[in-house]
Image (cartoon, rainbow, N blue to C red):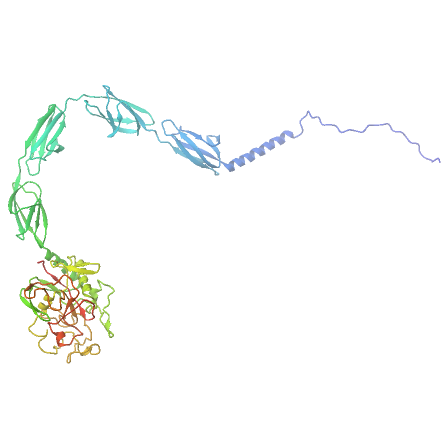
Length: 605
């Protein structure tokens, strides 16, 4: 089948077009600029990292020229070291100085300065002499070495150098040491010395002080080494003697100088009081009262029993006789003065007595002759609760059937004999006088009859103070007169039985101390109010001593015992026997109607 169409036109052949290849010999566009940017970024990052992880360290040294060697890796930038954060060490050294190892810390935003000061090295010294010789060298008084040796470790500054060579004069010289490890050399000219003068100095008597040209050189006898060919003044001094002074010209070798010392004496008269006092001069007893003594210091001690010793230092003078009036104070008077001051501070009153007559102490079965010769003092009233509580703060005298015994002004009761004796010792201690009783660990183990400290009254003293020709303290008949004292009366009928009929003192139990009129001797409640502890040991209920037939002088009884005497009567007592002056009891334990008062001797026997 034939179609109707246009005829096909042929086209000429063309090969496909290839992409043109870039010429590798020419640099790429923008390649150099990228490398620069990369390097800048790298440097910026490195700088940022270095500043964050490192720190600049600057070293300031003294001396400034010192060299610094840093042991850690670092970078020096403008005289500063850049180091990583952390602990580092450096060695600093300079010529003439001791090197120093320092440690420091790196890490921070701002640069840091490390200051290091080096210590200068000590100096050295070498000494030579003319003529050349051997000998010892001392620096500042200390042995340092020998001539010709190099002496090390000398601090900079001035030093005193001493050279000692046998046969030559000693040489002293001041040397300036520069330091910094540098050597100082000096040459010392030595002078030969002649044979020394050996001077033996003696005196009669010996032990005189030797002064050569005013310088003390010892005591005689003594050998002194001096320079020959010179004149010296030798002075010999001895207390109590005329000084001896002579000028001597010395020559080489041994020589001697002996000098007699003439004694210098003065007259001394002694007037001791009391006249029988013992006098000791320089430790030796002297019986003479007018004597001549060397002109020197003498220690004179004057003593006597019962008196306070005194010491004097006296230097007699040859041209002016001296007198020494040594008046001793009585020990008892001094102690009495102390006691009075103590008693005045407490408001206490002690009445003094000086008995001289003989009398009898009546016991249950016999009469014992007694004589009191020692003056004594006794409290005008009983010891109160207030006074005793200064010694035993917690003591309580208690009460009886609701009636108080513990008011401050009532007499202290419910204490044992030992309590009373220890209180007396406490009072002695407060007054500064020797204690009367010997006590230990709350016990009484005896007494000192010579002591003038506080004590309990002796039974003999109580009898002497209360003795009367009458049966009772007020007379021969019952009942007592009105206001005689505190006894078992009508006011105490609800507490004790029996009571005194027809008598009322208006105090059911103990009254305040001193509530009733005093006795003729100025003493309150003796007897009355409460019975009182006596000093004496109660022996077999009837004797004061082992030999009652002999008169007893100032009896104090045995040193210790099981029971002690109670004298007097008080608010519980109403019977004829109890109220009798001759009645005596004994006990050792506390009771509610037994108190005490204090006494003491005015002087030693």
